[in-house]
Structure formats: C-alpha cells, structure tokens
Image (tube, rainbow, N blue to C red; front, side, top):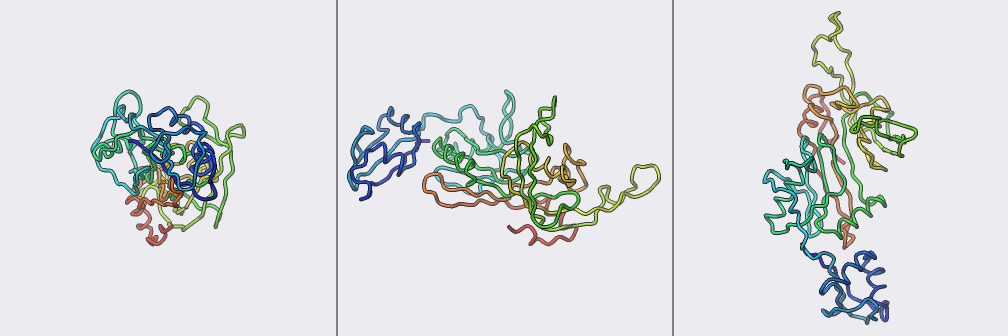
Length: 329
C-alpha cells in the first residue's frame, strides 16, 4: 500500500533547507529520505519534485513518498477466518489473538495463523501490503497484537518500543501468592542448553525485568478438583490459593513472564514448561495481553487498544467467586 506523508512550512522555518525540514519537522530517517530521493515524485514541494538542498519558504507544502505500494504480502496465504480488530487506521491495525493461534507461519507449509488472517482481511479491503507485526505472543497466550501496514509505521513503532512508549499490560493467573502490592523481578534469562524453546534464569544471560501488581487472590482450589491424590494413601491434594496479577515488561525476552513468575515460586496456571501443566478449566497457560499503549506513528496521537479477558480465564476465576471488577485496568 502506498504511503505518503506531508507537512507545511511554518514561519519559524522560513529559509530552512528541505533536508533539514524532513529530519527536524517531519522526523524522517536518513534511510527514508534516501529511498524517497530515487523514487519518481518521491520528494515534492508544492507538487513539484525538488532536491533536498532546496530552500523552503513559509507556506510551502512538502510531501514525501515513503512506500510505493509495489511490495505486497504475496508470500503469506490468505486464511478467511474470524479476526477481531480492536483498532485500525491507515498505518496500523491491532487485533485480538485467541489462545492456540500462532502469530506467524512456521516452516514451509502455510497454516492458519494471525498473519494469514490479517493478510486475508487487508486483501479484501484492497490494502494488500507486507505485514509487519510488532512484537509477538506465544501461541498459548491470548490478547492484543499490533501490526504496521507500511515500512514507515513499522520503523516508528519499533523506535517507540525501544523508548518505552509502546508497551503492553498483561493479566495472568498464577499458582500461589507473590509478595503483596507491587514487585519487580530483575533476573537475567538465557536459553537452556540444548533446548531451543526453553529459557531459564542465568547470571550469564541477557537482562530481563518484569514489573507486577498483585490484583486479587482467589481460592482455595484443588488441582484435581477434589479427586484423591495419586500418593497411594488416599489423601486429598492440599488446597491452594491463586492470584490475579497485572504485569508489564521493561524488557522483552522469550517466555520472560512465565520464567520470572516461576522463579519466585508462582508459576502461571496451566503452564506446561515452567509450571504444573493444565488444570480443569484452564487447558493453556493463563496469560493474556490485555492492553497496548502506543503513539500513532505519524501524528503522535496517544492510543490504547484493549482485548477483552478471554472466557476461560474469566470462568476459572468466577468459579472461585472473584468479582468481574478485578479485571478492570
């Protein structure tokens, strides 16, 4: 999809060179300016192509072609299945990814993934373009995912993520109860040797920081729903408490929330890798990306998108008499 940005020269920029205006006022990168210079009609002032050393006057209308629209997501097969759009404009789209749906296709074959569904959605609207998903979620994790519709938006959103302007707020159900109030887990993470998809706390790993807030506690409950435990003596499993926790990441490492919560003795409910696996009513890891905050890539408008709490998490906690108000941000 073609993408153009524009700006008008104000009094304070009278006499400024075009290149400086593009960088200072329109916040274009060196690479964006360089690419536009070699496109037909790439950089124009008052609808006429101009060189970047041109001198501007008050009232000049500057327009830049950031993306020609000749690159499309031809490598991604369309899958026309349910897609819940939470927010959309000409540059970005936020969708609600259900648990069990991967973000991207894996391997050579095509599959039903969020990227496939986005490709179908945009093609039906006549907006076929390269799909650039900003950040990922594990297949088991539900919640909001943000994608850029053009290269310029993707660059700016990645920059926002590095600056902490783009961030997500997660909800999780953990086994056990962490320290009350707010907490901060600052523990480096690294891959487990020989296990590509498993992480661990490792002093030699990359820095990882997770902030959490204990929202509510619920319980007691039994993993085996009142059945006899398998210890051979007919004793029932001890009753436990669980916690509803809000989390925010300062860094973005693989499985960061799951490893960090397990490291403080509160693994996420249903986590098969770092916890105790599935429980009745919760067949996956109880982690949900509820909200995302970001700035519109070109206007700077502050935006939020929110994904409703999924039914399995809501039902599990409501069965423990946790009020629905606990889910509110």
